[in-house]
Image (cartoon, rainbow, N blue to C red; front, side):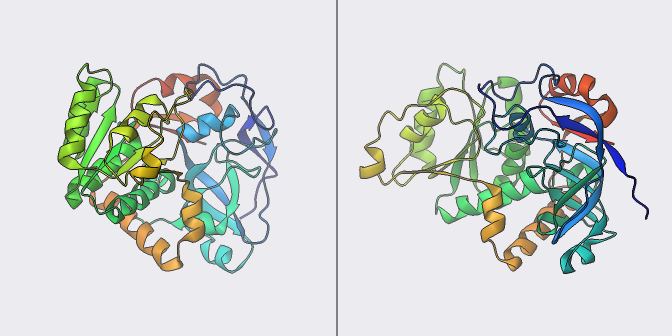
Length: 345
C-alpha cells in the first residue's frame, strides 16, 4: 500500500518530567497535548509500522503525558502506549512475518505513540491477534491482561491460596478476580466505594473491603489470620497499602506496580523486613517480556487471548472517543466511571 506523508495525532507539548505530582486526574488536556499533524514514522531495523485501529487509555498514559511516569516525555511526539492495528511495513525477519497481520502492541516511549493514525513499535512487542478476538479486547490485550496473568503466576508461586489487591475495581483488578475464582484462590480486594463491591464479587473476588469502612482494620486483621495471604499487589503505594503490608503474615511480599496516590507512605514496622522476612519490590511488565522465554511468552499470550474469546474475560468499555475529538471529549469520558476509554482514528 502507498503510505501517506502525514498523519493525525495527539502530540506531547512538553519534554522530560513534570515538576509536580498531581495523580491521574485530568481536568483538561490543554497543558499536555495538542491535536495536529505529524509525518508518518518509518520503521527501523526490527521495527514495524502499524495503522492503528483502536488505542486504549491507561492510567500510565495519563501519568506519562503529565510527566509523572517513569519514562520522560519527548516533546513533539505522539502520546499513547497501547492499542491494536494492522502491520503495514517493517524491517527484519519477524517484522516481515507480521506484515498484513492484526496485532496488539505496546510502544509509545521512544517518540512514536498510539494516539495517532500510525505508530512504529518494536516487532518483539507485537502480538498477533486471533480473528475471533474483538478490537476492544485486543486494544488493551498486552498491558492489563498479560500483567494479570504474570502477576497471578507470582501469587501461585507464593504457596498461599490467597492474595491482596488494591485499587481492585480497575480493569486489571477485574481480570484478577476472574483468575482467582477460576483457579480456587481467595482475592482480598481493596476498593474505595461500597457501590463497587457487588460487581467485583460477581467477577470472582472472595472478599471485598472498602477503605472508608469504620471496621476496615478489624476486618483486614481477621482476613490476615484466616486467609494468610503472602502477596500484596499494589497500584496505589500509599499509607493504606503500607498498613496492609504491616498487617500481613511473615514472608509477605509487597509488589508495587503503580503509584496512583501522591502521598508518600511510611513503613511503621521496618523491623518486619528483618525478623519476618518480608520484602518490597517493583513490577514492570516490560521486564517480564525481557526475561521470559519465547515459549513462556507464546503460552501466556495464547492463554490470555483464549480467555477473552471464551468470554471468561471481557473489557468493559465506557466510552470510545474519536482522535479528532479527543482534546474536548477525553477528559469527560474519563469521568464516566470505572471502565476503559478507547481512542479510534
